[in-house]
Amino acid sequence: MSATPAPAPEEEIDDDGPSACVMAFNANDPSGGSGTAADLSAIASVGAHGLPVVTGAYARDTSEIVDHFPFDDEAVSEQARVILEDVPAQTFKVGFVGTPENLSAIAELASDYADVPLVAYMPDLSWWQEDQIDLYQDACTELLLPQTTVLVGNHSTLSRWLLPDWSSDKSPTARDIAKAANAFGVPYTLVTGIPLPDQFIDNVLCSPTAVLCSEKFERFEAVFTGAGDTLSAALAALIASGTELTEAVTEALSYLDRCLESGFRPGMGQVIPDRLFWAHPDAEGEDAPEETDFEVPPHATRH
Image (cartoon, rainbow, N blue to C red; front, side, top):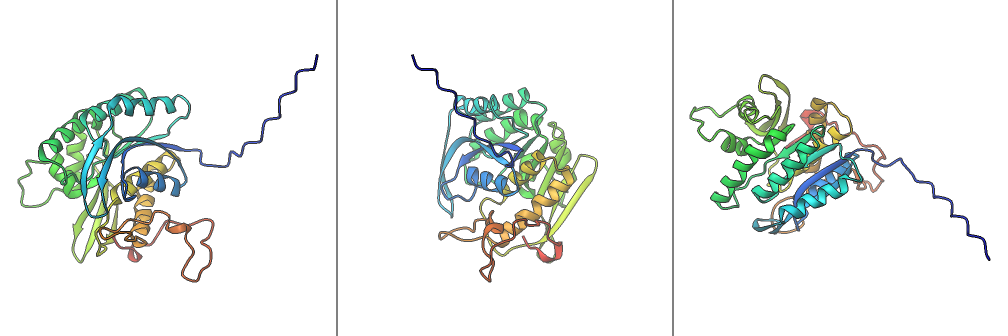
């Protein structure tokens, strides 16, 4: 009788890859501009590993969103819970997830993993029907914001959503928006795209009581798709990697600016941020350096 063969020696595993994982909830965007594609490339680009949970799919091109097809909330929840039994996530990132039911499933999951920070991004939903926007945003305020660590959004989008009865002649400040978000439990709000004179915009991280940091950039003369997903995903990845919040915001904004500066137009519509700008050969044809510093002096950048 032959002896039982000895088990083969285990192969050595290289553990030098990303140690931080970000679970990203978002819809698939076939243009590659926003959604899951934006999340994964931005998360990987700043040194973390993405755990994508697909919540639905857009029908869209680079010019406009035609429709959105949401997944069932059980499918969303099962995707997330199965992988979390195996791989721990250091941060959750939530983009557009399509339905109040999906928001409820994600909020329940976040409650079960209450020690994991959650970065929530509210995109411009003007392509959608008004009644659907209202239902979605109402569910977001009631269910997701109480679980949110950092809320990210454009000044006009957040103002319309969180301060619908604003009556002053002056636009609400970032702190006004942060106070409104805090009423639903959000400790930090990153307000982007605040108009400034001379074609500049400001981006401000606030708590309800203070401005924690702000970064000013010159406005780009282009219309982009996926900028908000890129920024919020990069921020989530930096937080997951242990970067302090204000530093993470500064680095994420600087990274976004470089992505926009290197943006490209693959079709006939909007410009897509180049989230892998650092990986391309430079103008002289030489390889990009192994380590790229995303910190760019404010005077040399534009949005």
